[in-house]
Structure formats: structure tokens, C-alpha cells
Image (cartoon, rainbow, N blue to C red; front, side, top):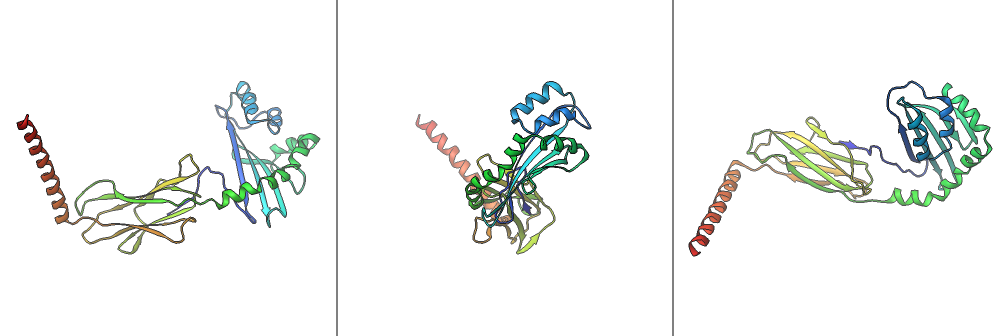
Length: 273
């Protein structure tokens, strides 16, 4: 099972792009925002946007801005794009190769015309290519960052053989978020009965995920969790073997003897007192 980062900033090199996005929304449904409100949103800060929207609008809408820096042969050629998205539909973009705003939909047409008439706004967006170049070292740093995952395998319940159980492969503390986790039973990959939590962000630039396998363990079986990640030279495997009935009984006997010993130890202390 392959997990990809959800809602995380992604970084790429070569012909890839670094992408950053912000979004904001207000309560109650709406099909379109006032066009007079959309205009200032393009050139004010996120905090200003919130102050503009909430006192005025009683309708709900989602507006997103996504800025991209595309690098070709290092910083030899840089292409910057800023996209504006309203209710999951792209309406407007700024293309550094063109040097101006372009409408993607009819809703974005009057906005593009207005923004292209504002020299200070155009100059600011045209300078974004230089900001991309200045940030290239950060892109390199983040794209090369690697943190190895920690892998643990365990059953959700301690049960004897031939009982339905859920085996968990817990993979934690890794970066970047691209990871592949597979379950094997006796060397054969298991594809049915496999569920995943997906990627979970830890808040410290690392991720974790749980990949679970529904199973009815039998004596002699070997369950293996295999993890592939860019930080690893090769796949990492962790095995789990179900306990036989005799091992299960021995464990229970050991627990009973240990508990009995504690009881006698307690009685000895009482008698001593």
C-alpha cells in the first residue's frame, strides 16, 4: 500500500515544482462571491482577507491561492505560476512567462483585466521569479532531507491460534512522506484485507502511518511487513510469527506462576510483620 502526503507542501527539482497553498472560507452556501470583493483579495495578506470576508459575507465559499516555482537545470530557467481557485474551480492565474494575469474562466476575466491594469501589482508578481531563485537553496535542502522510518509489527489482540485478529504495521518518524508498505504471509503478498490510516503528519516534519492486515493466524505461518522509503538503501522487513497452542499455554502457565509467586511473597511479608 502506497501512501502519499496529504495536505503537505511538496518539493521537486529538475522539471518538478515546489508548491505552496493557502485557502480560506466563510459560513453558509453560495454560488459566487461579490466581484468587488474578489479584486482586493489578490493583493492583500491572509489576515487582511479574513477581516474583509467575515464582516461582509454571510455566504460560504472557498477561495484558494497556489504559488508554484518550477526549476529547469537548477536556476538556469525558472517559471513562476500563481493560481487562484474559487470553489475548486481555477478562475485566474499569473504566468511569469507571459508577465501578466490570465483568466481561466469567465469569472476570472474581469479580475484579470483589473489586475493587469495595476502596475504595482504586476511588478510585484513579475519579481516572484527572483524570489524563486533566492529560495532555491531551501528547495534543495528540503528535497534532500531524509529521515528513516521506525517499523513495529504487533497484533491488536493477544489471542490463541485460529482466531480472527488484526495485525498492525506501525511505521513512524519518516520523511519525506512517500512510502510503500506491504504485507506478506509465508512469502506471498497479501492484498485483500489490508487497510491503512493514510499518512498522518506529526507536526515536526515527519510522518507516520498504520497499515493493518486482517488475518486468522495459523501455526507455522510467518507474517512480514515490508517497508520501502527513499531514506532506506533497500526494503526493510519485520516479521511476526503466531504463537502455537503449546507456547500459548506455557505463557499462561508462566503468568500464573509469576502471580502465585507474588502472592506468596506478599504473604511472607505479612507473616514477617
